[in-house]
Amino acid sequence: ILYLKHIALHPNRIKRTDPAPLLEEARSILNQSLQDAVFPNVDDTCMTENKNPKLHVICVSSNDRPELQRLRRSAERLGWQLQILGLNQPWRGLGSKIELLQHYLSDSIPRSDMVLFVDAYDVLLLEPAINISQNFIQFIEPTRPGVIVFGAEMNCAPDPALRLMYPETAPSAFRFLNSGTILGRVHDIRYMLTAVRRDIEFHHVRFGADPFRFDDQRWYARFMLANPHRAMLDITSRLFHTLHDTSPQHFDLSQHPDFENQHLLLRSKLFNTFPCLIHGNGNGIDTFHDLSEYLARNASWPDPPSSLEGKTDTFASTYSTLPISDNTPEQHRRVWKNAAS
Image (cartoon, rainbow, N blue to C red; front, side, top):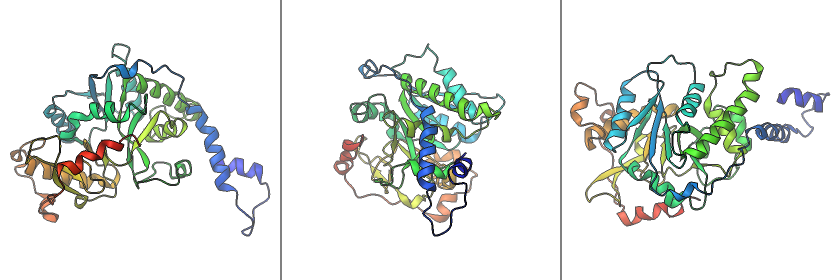
């Protein structure tokens, strides 16, 4: 589309010495395309009244792999039941994630409930996740009612050209949307899924493409860029920590202000935060497995060390231990004060 538009505007080939208008043309065309992803007008006035909503922890998986079992056990350790959609069903593509989630969030689910939607094979819930709903309600929702929180990553994928549509200045290198972790109210996520599916229909399916064979991250990114008041990124990993282009050395063990003394939890040295989960996206899958194995061996999370019997300690082969932070709980307690910024 960009090429055809450009040829129509500039039938004669642009010389190297001439100014190239491609970037502004690209922004204009992308902006025009994003209008089809605009969020419907909805009434949010009653959504924030429920201060103790039920949290639905959901993933989509067609196979019961060991990684899924570990995610399930981490949810159980927090007192939650992981809702696994599509299990033992044929895998049709990433579009299944959108369809199955939309079907699950039927009218029988209270619309003020909350949803934590995560990838199945490369996500591990951590102990601070026990407070994820209250952190959202207390620190994010008062200034951003109706907002949906996505994880953030350092790579603009799958469409590098969408970098043109993101803010050019950002306080974090983690400034691009990652769709592997999503948090919000049922009401808002329902309408987001409606808008996303409409956008997919208009820009994908109507050209004869398979309605399930696409990258869901592309369409969620379009939704966020078209509706900046409806979606935000966790750019400092207070909730979600993606691991692409990170290593275990970017983490240590530290005392959390809201947990008992001498109880050490995983802390991001990049942001001085205790993430609620880690997500091994992209090339971060090795870091994910290293950290997961280390937490099992040294913190019994979510399984005791005996669960790793017979396995090679791949983490210890490179990093014998995670460093222990000397920060005090009082220093960490200040982290959440600017959560909605």
